[in-house]
Amino acid sequence: MTEYLHRDPTRRDALLTIEEVADLIRMPVASLRYWRVLGTGPRGFIIGRRLRYWRQDVMDWLDEQRESAGRGVA
Image 1 (cartoon, rainbow, N blue to C red):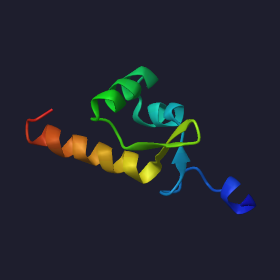
Image 2 (tube, one colour):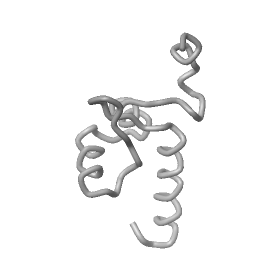
Image 3 (cartoon, rainbow, N blue to C red):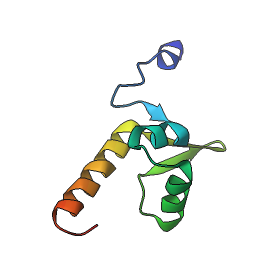
Image 4 (cartoon, rainbow, N blue to C red):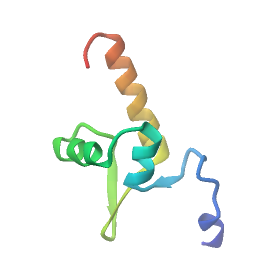
């Protein structure tokens, strides 16, 4: 358990808070919350009462956004 607490946050398997995701994608936290309601944002999940995101899920979602923008579908 101690090893997990000291993981490098840049690793692909890092757990992120909504604030960390907002910083990563340079968008307001409110946008992430809105996208979550719509079901269009990066996939997050609840642990206890806290919302968390896997870093890789966020990166995959960003790739999907880039690909859809390239097709002219934003």
